[in-house]
Amino acid sequence: MKQEMAYDVAGNSYPVTDYKDDYDGEKFGFWIFLLTEMMMFGVLFLLFAINFYRHSELFGTSSGHLNVWLGGVNTVILLVSTYTMGLASLMMRQAKVRASAYFVGATVVMAIIFLSIKAFEWSVDIHHGIYPGSGILDAKDKGEILFFGLYFVMTGLHGLHVIVGIALMAWVLLLIRSGGIRPEHNIVMKNVTLYWDFVHLIWIILFPLFYMIGV
Image (cartoon, rainbow, N blue to C red; front, side, top):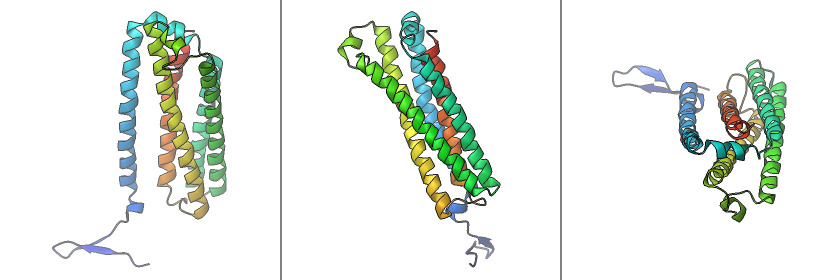
């Protein structure tokens, strides 16, 4: 296929770069997106820090009601899933397409397990009447209300990002199958891998904030 050319006013020709092949542009654009995500979570972390300073004792007491073992298992799951997604990206660069797809699939499975454990945790809390707006929670001290409010908002927002990650990885699998992602054109996989790293890093901060301050 003939390369499309563009010409400046002096008559000099330049090859036209298709947006799908604009590696630097796609990478830069994704980093801008991640920056906005960091700003959003950064505001929530700041809000947590302010309220923890004001209600340190009650935050610690409330944290003691969370299941640190389930939170720890989920932390390990995300750590391993980040490793498998990184391997998927590495395998693709090495032209090991089948192995790459296998590791993406393994990452999806671990992400689903993570969500299942988190859903179980939430269901236990809700069963005991601990959720925003419940009469049982509203009857507690202000510090406990703030702690659990932040807990549900921040872990819920993180869970939403995990769901988005699962959808993106499913899309990656479809692109691998159709040839849209291949060793010489894998920017989408690199960006999805970077996104999953971000999801993992956010949880690495959330886990000690909510689960370990009461240990």
